[in-house]
Each structure stands twice: as structure tokens, then as C-alpha cells.
Image 1 (cartoon, helix red, strand yellow):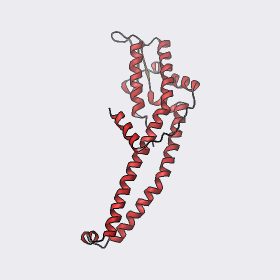
Image 2 (tube, one colour; image 1 turned 90 degrees about the vertical axis):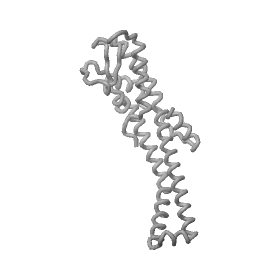
Image 3 (cartoon, rainbow, N blue to C red; image 1 turned 45 degrees about the vertical axis):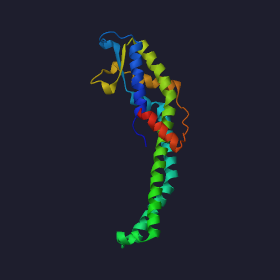
Length: 207
């Protein structure tokens, strides 16, 4: 399951931070009072809507595991059966048994199909999470812009990029409170992909 902030969410937020800096009209080196910091991971995981998404993603992940379990068990059972039947046979003897060779080939094909299916389901989970976070990111963008404007700041940085920052310039708690006021839930609908669609998603993410 997903325990850490998805990379695509973090990347989106970094773009957002850059936009906020430019919107503030930064020129030269910002003065200390012009700089604010926040913890993006905390906002997206500790906010009510973030916890809602995490809970739903975990439930969908469990649903996927339940769907895959019978196939995984079928492969394991056949693998153990073949190992038991061929334990006393040499490789040459096995190759002279068309029935065993056919079963080995079928098992290998089944295992490859299962791995492909597992990867597609993992892609489904990632796309589901990304789509669920989209409206949250949009709402958070407005909230961060409001806070930056209210504080008269020129720069907003993530705490992961700062060696030290006083608590008074950390707006994480404020952002969480405001996000909680605006939204506590959001639709988290499982996305279903075909093998081809999953491949297209992977290609677009790699570019």
C-alpha cells in the first residue's frame, strides 16, 4: 500500500510553489520575513480529505489483492504439484515427458499473465489516487495563494528544502485548517485499465 506521498503529487506541488514565487513578484534575494515554509506531505496526509483518500486507496488496494489472490494461489498450487512430481526426475527425463513439459509451459505463461495483470492493477491504483488528489491540489493552490498574500510573503518553500525555519513562518497548520474547512471528502472512484491503457499511462508518466 501507499504509505508515502506519491511522486506525482510532490512534483505537482513543486510546480505550484514555483508559480507562487513568480506570482509574488520576487526580485533579488528575499528578506527573511518574506519567506514562508510548509510541509506538503503533512498537508496532504494529515488533512481530513487526505486521510479520506488514503483510507479509500487502502480499501481499493485490499479489493485488488482479494481479486488477485485466487490466481496467485492457483499458480502456487500448480508449481508445488509440478515440483513434487518431478523431484525424482532428471532434466532429461522431464523433457521426455510431453505432458510435464506442457504443464511447465502453461504454468510459465500463467505466471507471466499474472504479473502483467498485477502491474495493470497497480497502475489502476496509482491513477485512482492521482485523480482523487486532483481537486485537493486545486483547492490547496487557492489556499496557499491566500496565505502568501495575507502574510505579504514573496517565497513559499517546502520544509524538506530548508535546513532551519522558525515555527512562525511555517504555515502548514494553517493550510491544513483551511483545507479542512473547505473539503473533508472527495470522490475516490476506482479506475479500471486495460493492458494497453496501462501501457499508455506508463509512457506518459515516463516522458
